[in-house]
Length: 137
Image (cartoon, rainbow, N blue to C red):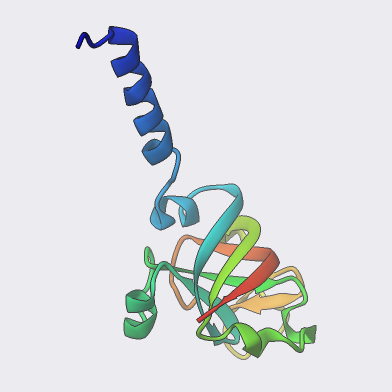
């Protein structure tokens, strides 16, 4: 049976597109602009979104997690329903050091929208969450 060069080339492209197109969690949270993530959530005032359950159980920091808030974080009554669950979310990344400081804080803290974001992951970016869907445990 003869193998055609175009079939091999097509297979190589399909393989690359399926594996090259999916950026790692670390690449996504270290990037810029709009992002879609799937991860495990721990609620600690802010949402801490982890790449996997092992990272969440060990409470690892960046690059295994990213800190995120809704712009109206403290007005939301449903925040605890996400704690310990797998979620998918969309949002926008912001450089933490560029965020404005909170007015009259007891300790220096940054604001994202109308929400304080402590950045417990200690990453260079934080996430302004636009939507979040609970996928279960």
